[in-house]
Length: 104
Image 1 (tube, rainbow, N blue to C red):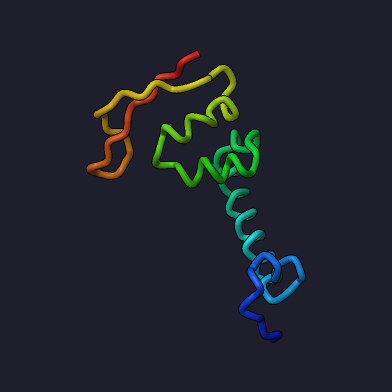
Image 2: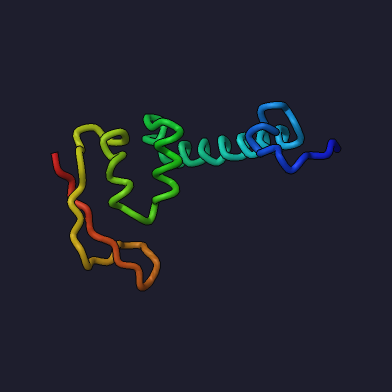
């Protein structure tokens, strides 16, 4: 293994094909496989770009942030109106999420 120098940053190391490059390829492959599994589970995700899908999955418990992507997943739905104080069916106990109603 080749030594790295304190002045090198990870970006320079990746660009030059150093030690981190094989690990980055493994991480990219694992992320692509994970996202493909989510697309197979919910086929509407095939209509969403990889960056948008990553944003949806990372903010899955925050419906307000996910609403920005609704028009990419579902035709004729611009946004959802959330009602406060209702418990989502099938959610974990003590978790309150607004009930959704589509707005055209």
